[in-house]
Length: 218
Image 1 (spheres, helix red, strand yellow):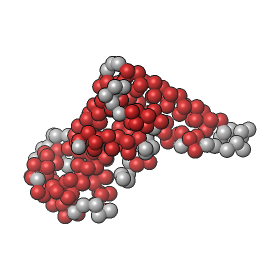
Image 2: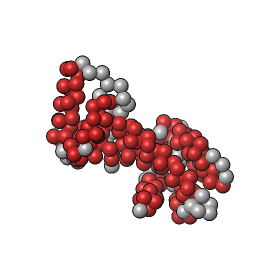
Image 3: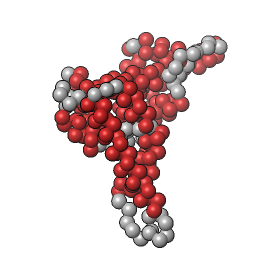
Image 4: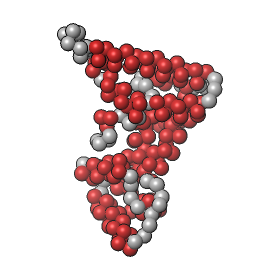
């Protein structure tokens, strides 16, 4: 069941724009926040982890606010939790732990990269996913480096390196064409969808998180 769920999540991420590992990691952080909103009261240890951290980082706080505004959880949970955080602030308690949603995202990032290593394996992996990976969106720079460090050697690493080299080369060509067609001498030439999106993809490839999804998660 766990393998099937991981495979399904990877396939869904590969069918969407942006680095798939960024997407999976971001979704894991959102899942943690939704858990806090919907079930945190029933799991005192979850609330305690948030209190020990003094709340969430800026990115996850914005996502938490967005989830509450969209009615994707109990707003009373936010009020209750932040009431405790305010009480701690008034009491002068110092908190030093890192954002727990970031911790959940990092943990799932590691699991996703381990799953990618296994799924890309030429013998024991998944042929359909290997094809989707070849045809899908590029990994961002950071996640390519992390994936390579997890895979380490063998045919799976060659697949990873070849796919990313081809994807980044194609993106570079699209970006150059996008810039060329902004020159008045070539401005009448139509831009392809890949060229129109090339600057967004380039930002995401270098910086990581898909820029169009930072403020409003799926």
